[in-house]
Length: 128
Image (cartoon, rainbow, N blue to C red; front, side, top):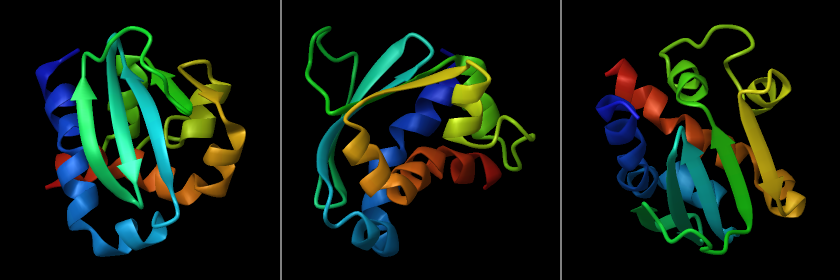
């Protein structure tokens, strides 16, 4: 993975926890979310809307309630300041085959806007 993608994603925990509105939106969510950016897996431990930890290179069989994996190209496109049509959303990327979402669908749909906002935060890092 390119260093800039890695750096942008690794800033997610700090950005979530600094955003009171986002933390409030996710206040009922406690989950372990595995996000795979290219070949690099991350484990986000979310507790009450706050990212308790973001761990890179986690153990191979670390449990997670939800897994979102995408190609480097997919994440880079999603994190552009203004993403192109078809590259702008988790579901659009899944439809085009560049991303996959697996696991507990209740966690995904009950907290969809929060999760989409968390995973779009690196876009703001790029825009500044």
